Each structure stands twice: as structure tokens, then as C-alpha cells.
Length: 515
Ligand code: MSP
Image (tube, rainbow, N blue to C red; front, side):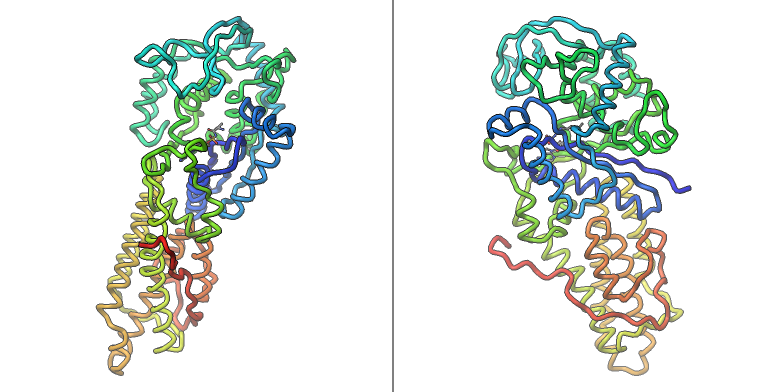
């Protein structure tokens, strides 16, 4: 049985249209899913949308539509974008679905029955924007609540609370014991510091009088569930096999624990504290805790993308202008997983032109053209060993190592360096000279074989990021072989193989913004 890999991402808030940050996370997860499949693993990739909460209710009110209609329209935009960008998921987590609602209600009931939820009255400062009560910890150095909290008002309210603080020591011990709980490693330290300061419990209900757009409490219909408590549970409610706390389904446990891809802003407190403690309270053991892969942010000239600053980058438009795979390539090559990056349309064009059009595209085009010109597209596999075999194998190893550490940009670099080495090999061997010397016919055959076999391996390696380009290269090689790491072994193209005709896969982008 192949190993199983359950990969999920944050579910996108359906308060507005998808932006570049959403697209980055989903493409990153899609690339990870595809590369795990190349390894021969069985993958379940879940993503979806977070549809409840106060902001959605407010946006719907503003537009004068019911929240159901509002989220349906926004959800459709996300679904269409993932289709356009080739993000292929196996499960879709939409939190208004009955399957999810049932699971959330069942778990609330269980936590309540076990005394892990309690009702209490709280008065205090409330941030309307963040939908939470604030404590003195949230005050800035000047003693005021900062602008990030928006409008802050005094409120008194009865609510249900989840016993969070009593798990503090358990969580600290878990963070210390499990090195790969949070990746990259520096985030683990940040999380530990935050957990040390953990004091209060978590308010998990909202009175219906001010928020109706949520999942109703099964034992108290006056309340709906706090949106984070609802949303986090998607990772189990939509898991393969479904999560049934009573049955502990075998299928669920064959896939769980998940690897969850999230942005740095939702590690603390949502995933790193609330979610891990929720699972612990539900009876998940330490080795059943998920792994959190935390990526950085795409900024615009160093500043956060935001609707109010008017600097939100629309991935849908970029894909229409430059092509979906061009955008995928840029998003995967111009950022290092875990760190932030600055979006630049000019770099998008430059990277494509220099790395894909000039380097890889040119290699493909010249190799196939020469094979046709000198050998009518017929490959000869001789006995001789050339330098590219060793370099191909080094590239495959480096590529896999980098992907295992989720460093997609570095994995792509390994492929590009190999493509550059292949281009250098063309210059050094000068097939156009070999073709003029009948005594060197065998050498020419050998050079053409090396180049074509290298291209086959390169196609496999780029396939998680550029699935269509990889298929196009296979088609031009007239090769129907396997797209897998196992098939990235040297020498699969047989003697006498007839190649297809070259067609540009990466035509240069001629654009006003290109430098
Ligand atoms: N709905 C919550 C997540 C619930 S998970 C149970 C949420 N939604 S979000 O739409 O605001 O963000 C979705 C994901 O996109 C998050 O992982 C977030 O970090 C990521 N990004 C949002 N803006 C981003 C950038 N500018 N750059 C990269 N990723 C960013 O949070």
C-alpha cells in the first residue's frame, strides 16, 4: 500500500474576491500534492471556503442580499479561480454544508457534556472588526487599543467558553517534543512564546441577537458558533472517511494527521493554540497532532495588500494576461516558503522570459530541431556515457530534497541549473559541426540522445508547477511514458524512438512592463 498524505490549506474567507495571497497558498498546496503523487504517495488534498461570521453577515447586509446568496457568489469566484489556475483538489470544504454543520454541533455537544464548555458572563472591551473581547494584553504601549482592532466598545454578554488555559502546559511540552509540529523551525519559537503567555479561555459563542450567520448551538438555540471554532473543524469534518467521534472511523485514521498549509497571520493564536488544544480536548493523542506548514506573505512594495490601500493584486486578471502557468511559475519561484516576498509584475515577465522562454524553451526547441534536421527525429541510443546523465541524477536528487523541505523555489532552481548545463553542453559539443563530419556520426547520435533524455526528465520535474507544459514537452517528445519520480531514471527513451515536432511551449512575453 502506498503511503498516504492528507494535505489541507486554510479555508478562504468569503468576505470578498480572491486575491494573490489566496492564490499563492492554493498553488503551493497543489504543487506539494502533485509532487507527493510523483513520489508514488496517495494524496488527499482538501481546500475550501470559510463562509460564516460577522464580516460576511455585514457585507451581505451592505449589498442588501441574504448571506446565503452572498457567500454563494463569492464561493463561485474561488471555485472558478482554482479551475483556471489548475488547482486540483480532492475535497471541497464549504462550511455551510450540512456535513460540516452536523460535525460541529456534535462536537460542541460532546465538549459541553464533558464539561469542557461552560457559560459565563463577561463585560469588557470588544473589537467589532476582530469579533473578540480584548484584554489588557492587547493594549499598546500608550495604553490604547491599536488601529488593528478597529472600533472598540464596552460590552457585557453571556457566552459559552472553551477551557483553553488548562491545556497550556500540555501544549508547551508538545511544542518542545515535536520538532516538525510547525515548519519552518523559527515559527515554533514564536508559537512557544505566545503559549507561555496564554491566560484565559476562549469564547466560542455569539448571541444570535448580534450574529445570526453561523452554526447554531445544539443545546442553546440563542447562540451561534464563533467563526474560528467552526472553521477550524473543517479539517476533520471534510477529512476522507469523515470524522465521527463516536465511531473513530478506520478510514479517517488511515489519513489523519493532516499537513495544514497556512499563512503566518493565522498561526497564532488560531492554528497553533486554538486548533491544537481543540484536538487535544477532543481526545487526539500527541502523535495525532497535525503538522503546520506556515508560509509568508506577498506584499506590495513592502506593504500589506489590503482593500483599503487599494493595492490588492487580482490573480484572475494576471492569469488572463500572462497565462495560468506563468502565474504558477512566478508564485512558486519568486518566494522562499516561510518568508515574505514583494510582488512585481515586471519580475513575473522577466523570470518567465529568461528562465522558461530563453533557457528551457530554447533547449527544447533546438534539441528537437537538430534531431529532425540531422536524424529525421529518430533517436539512437548508444553505449556511451555523457556528462548529462550524472547531472540529471544530481538534479533529481536536489529537486526531491528541496521539495521534501517544501522549498519549491529551490527545487525549481535545481531544474533550471540543469537546463543551463544542457544548453552549455549544446554549445560545447556543437552538434552542427558534428553533423558535417561523417566519422563523428555516433557522437552526434549520442549528444542528441543525451539532450532528449534530459528534456524528458526535466518535464517530469517541472510537472508539479507546470503540469500543462510538462505534458506539452512529453507530447513533443512523442512520449507516453510515466510522469513519476521513478521514471526520472536515465535511459527510458528507447533506441529508434521517433520524436515529435518542436512547437514553442514558452513563447516570450513581449510586454510594456518587461525590463
Ligand atoms: N478564513 C480564515 C482561515 C480559516 S482556516 C480554518 C482566513 N481566511 S483568509 O481568506 O483571510 O486567508 C486565507 C489564507 O490566505 C490564510 O492562510 C492567509 O494567511 C493567506 N493569505 C492572506 N493574505 C495573504 C498574502 N498577502 N500573502 C500570502 N498569503 C496570505 O484567514
